Image (cartoon, rainbow, N blue to C red; front, side):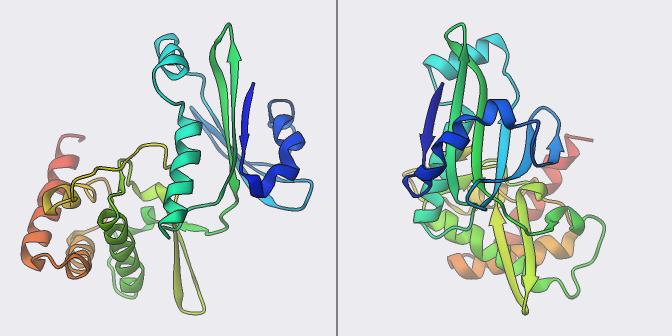
Amino acid sequence: MLTTVNPKYEHLRTWIESMPQIFTQEGKCLFKGRNEVRRLTAPDGTEVCVKRYGIPSLPQRFAYTYIRAPKAQRAYSNALRLIASHIPTPEPIAYMIVKSARLLSDSYLVTTYCPYPRNFYEFRGHGIEGHEPIIRQLAYTVADMHMQHIYHKDLSPGNLLFDISNGRVQLTIIDINRMAFPSATIGIKQACRNFARLWGNDDFFMLLAECYAEKRGFSVALTQQLTLRYHRRYWRFRK
């Protein structure tokens, strides 16, 4: 078993290393599918989110053991990079790799728990009136990422959590194991493709593209045109 712990949380190492034994016995299940996500309370009172990744296929187990980093490791490293770049994401606490027959079996990612109760699925089939600050915040956050050569390859509605506190939008980005850090500038076409998986009506994407374009110094009209085109193309082939 390989366990990497953020130095800030080294005092929780023993508890973290017990995760394979306590994961299903403690806390509250937040999601269960191919992966399982649970909310637990650490011995020092820290509220944490623990994600246990599903056991991959045999070829993937081999690949994650000898060729590329497992998802939990990538998510942990990516979180450190995002935080260093002032991009909002839950703080990484640790990741753990469990092997069986010398190949990856289970893997766990431990982060601080994010209490934001809302995500961008709520924009499906609804207008944007009164929600403009939320959309604007998303546009500015993604623009900040792109300007720092950070590209979330799974920018979907469920991976964007938010809340409004004292009139201020609070946004965080999760499920960050699939990211790219290109050395070249992220141009307008690649940027607009990044919004394709989101849900919303045309007004949602028009405002999103407008705010993004203003932040990047792009043509508003062209950014809106490309954003709508890539969004419609993406979903047309998934019907």
